[in-house]
Length: 445
Image 1: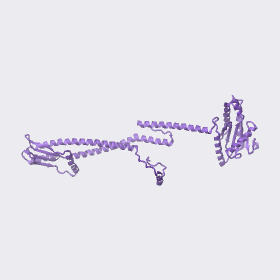
Image 2: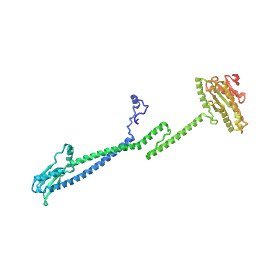
Image 3: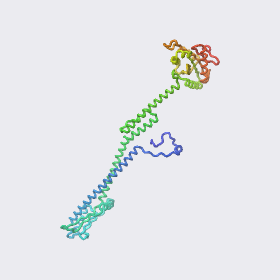
Image 4: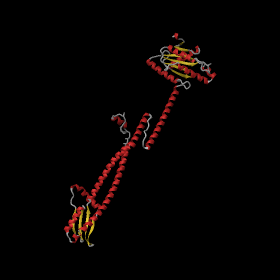
């Protein structure tokens, strides 16, 4: 596809295209790099060939003119020497024969012999050429008059005394033939130059245009894929290689920044959804997750249990042993709670020393009570060897969907109320919310 053609996906309807492009300025037609280089080379080569050809042609014409003048002078002297005796005896027939023989042999256009008084003794004019030479004949006469406007004159001498003179004009067809040959040679050189330029353009395309096209294609892929480990290929041209290396370094830096940004986003997402002390989910995430699972349960059916937990005597432990021990207790309790749950269950720290657990699905209320008992048993162990006198415990309130609430707030309030009822019963107990009262034993259900 040409770069000036519309990309895939653009509507083909002419009316739609007209509506989209209405009022927009027309984009100028842009040539490719290869076309630009070709035109530049053609211009440079054409001007250079024309200048060199014209200079050589002018030099050759001047050299040919000098040679022709010298040659005509030699021919004129030869004719003057040959007809000396015939002029002395006024033998016009002999003069004409000798003049015609030499003029035909030397391809003269005109030859004329005059006596001392200026009377014409003999005259020769070139006969009409064949039809094939008509064009050269027509061009030769003006060329001959242009390059050799004056006739070549040589005296006829007898014992040192001038008795006549020879006047000659060369055939301009020689110049016409030379110019035609030179023009053909220049045309042949231009053809050879064109073939050379074609080969040169292919080499330019391989050495310059193809690396540029590869770099352009790579930039398009990098822009579309946001990096995607795209790299510019190596080039034999130093400037292109340096450009590719700089672009690769830029892509590497962009990828590093993207990776750092993704890491920061993950960290921010983790901080937004997790408690910084225990690593559990926080209240906001727990509420969103509970609301989403409730929506699924309302559509698909199923039971859900929410466990609301509060650490017993946490304020006393925190005040007596210090905040560091209090934080250690919260971390240990969170770890023990997490260990008693299924992989799909969610546990969160709601704030302070309060925790919540989302059990989904729950097939029977006894399952929620059983998990609460396991949590109480796991939590009720000495904190550590250094703090073996500290034995944590939690009070747990349980609320079920759909019996105890239809929304996340309703379930949390019900579980919180059940948790306060459990605290009244003593440390490390659990209670299930049931309307206006709370049951404490599975047999009561």
